[in-house]
Amino acid sequence: MAYRMTRLTGSLLCVVALAACHGSSAETKSPAADPPAGTVELSQEFLRSGQVQIEPVVASTEAVAVRTSGKAGFNEEHLSYVASPLAGRVVSIAVRPGEHVDGGQTLAVIDSPDLGAASSEFIKARADLILAEHTHKLAQELLAAKAMANKDVQKADDEYVKAKADLRRTRERLLSLGVPQDQLDGPMEELHVRSQFNLTAPIAGTVVERTVTLGQIVGGDQPQRLFVISDLNTLWVTADIYEKDLALIQPGEEVTVQAAAWPDEEFRGRIDYVGDTVDPNSRTIKVRLTVDNHNLRLKPEMFVTATVHTSGTTTVLTVPIAAVHGEGSGQPYVFVGANGNRFTRRPVTLGAKVNDRVAVVDGLSPQDQVVTAGSILLKAEADRQTNG
Image: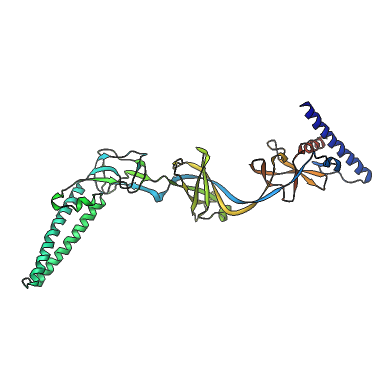
């Protein structure tokens, strides 16, 4: 360690001596103005020693990413609110909140007098159709034998058409209530009046809400929301985009979403809607993202951050992290080469760090060159000049 400190001190003294000698020589030749504060001049001999190394600023073209925050919610295209189509009393409940259900799976069984009336009406409609069909067939035979008046034949035809319409209406009513088709099309002698029906899931998904209890009276003029079912494999994320970034945002662009609960995991999705109005207070536009959630880690109502990977591009300047000084204790700066052996301290605004390089948002141009190895020597000399 002592050897390294001695070597560094020696190098620094060499830089100072060389700078002093160079300044003394310059004073002998001409009364040139002193260099600006924070500027260090080195002799060509010292530069050739290799203790100071210079690298050009690296410019690269990268896609523009717009970052924002938002909140996850249900995908309303895969969300269902389940209510009872008939008034009745709940006699059993088949599922609990958090359970996955398939489309058509029974959620609850409800006993409904209205269903009993509808079932009775269907049985009567089937019997009426059998009678009307028989009467219609007999009337056609009698008409062919000229044994029945035309008006009586027409009446039999009308009754037959009406009987078919009534059966179709009552049958479709029972089908809409979840009565199996094979129970309606069986032999007439097997039909019976039924008052209980299965309330089934209209879609596959997770039961995210259940508000019904055993014995509860449901249905009526204002049906209650008994179950909420959602397919949570995709979620909608609603986010805010500042109007200055609106030109960069297009439906279909890819996004990545992160949640505080899973900081090392990204959820991928796309923009599927961009709002048409600007919030007058926040000056933002609402956008909706459809996000893949097949592992069910994202939860509705979670706050998230979203990064929109736009089709726009920008030029990014980067320098080695070793070239940057003053970070964490004030204004960061680098030493920029100027006029061959002169180096000037230049304030910079830094961006993201990637590996051993850091982006420079402001303060440099693609034509600049910065000091990397040996920049600590220049810093010490610049500090000495500043402090007198």
